Amino acid sequence: MFAPLPDGAPRIVAHMLARHAEVEGAAPELRGMPLGLTPVPLADIQLVDTWIAQGRPQ
Image 1: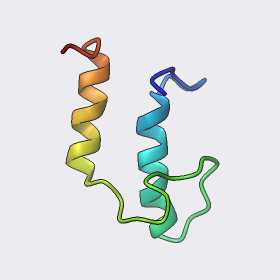
Image 2: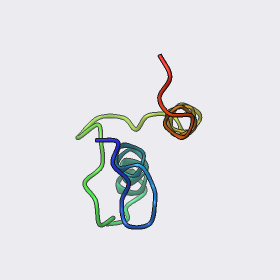
Image 3: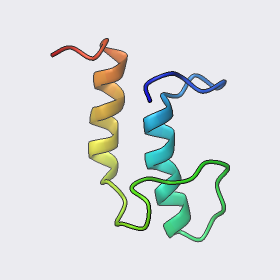
Image 4: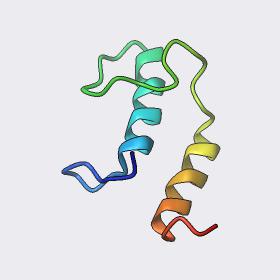
């Protein structure tokens, strides 16, 4: 889930961003999450990305 993709992006972040692309009508390479639901706000995705970059502290 947290393992980076070849471009270095955390997998979970890439899937959340892909959901935004799906809603906008694009066909991303990855399947977006949450599947079939409203995308997670971009500010919240940035928070997750920062948390992962910091080593996922408790």
